[in-house]
Amino acid sequence: MWLCIVSFTVYSNDVDCDNPVTTIDINVCEGRKAEKAEQVLEKYFLTALETIKDQKSAYSSLEKSQVTWKNYKEDYCAAIYENWIEGTIRGYMQITCVLKLTKQRTHNIWGDYLTYMDSTPPRLPEPEE
Image 1: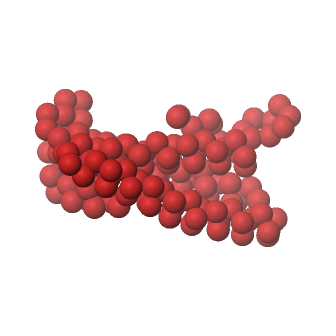
Image 2: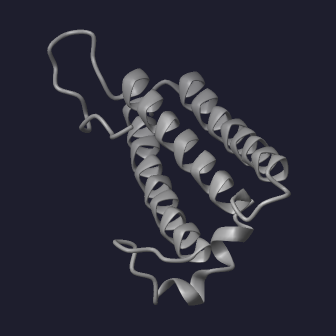
């Protein structure tokens, strides 16, 4: 699934994401956003695990759900890639799928594990959607 992102790694150092010109430039820039979103998700996920570390069943279930979610994201976005097989936009469509689902997952984890029912401030700030 990350083929289109990883394949541009060498090229990506030369891309100005404030002014992408080619399809490859656009894919590289979206890939950077997706990679950053993955890093944010990891931070929120690890904080959620820390929050529930004493609840063994919840901890285990959250870990399992993350593996399941990653498989879902990969399969779903791979289907998006295949759906756009006829055009050069397919890489962009796949990467934006990854970005969208990753941001959604981060927000879900934030809302379900890092916020409180009372006026206690959340453990981390609300992530961008």
